[in-house]
Length: 170
Image 1 (cartoon, rainbow, N blue to C red):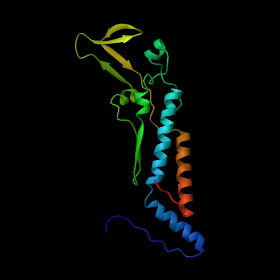
Image 2: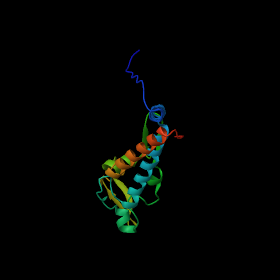
Image 3: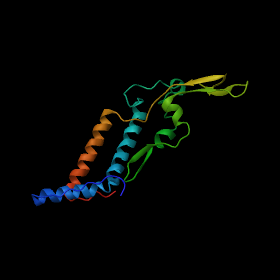
């Protein structure tokens, strides 16, 4: 048999051994814990759009639209914010978005015109042409210290509930 295995024989207080067995059994199917972590990460990420700050607490550079029209950066129609979702399984959790332009906002980018006519777009009600536009990074995905603490709390609560024989249903 490839891989590793561990066998433990528990001897002692029945309540303790039963709790340990229940926790070990729960670890075979941790999808419920990962789903709870995913829900927390989605809420934390959406809060960054409200705060207009990255996972490290740095404020996002204000967008031209927000400067000229008011409102929040990256939240004109809230499509990006509302697209944040997660997928959890017994293997782990992933969270993010499938919006194509998300990476540009997360990492920043230089958008270059493909033709001599340049890029044409509206700014403050007037049409402008540019050969190149810099989009600054406005990171929204990431785990900050508060998220890490919340993840640890979710895992601890989940294992404590499992060790008491509670249900950890998804």
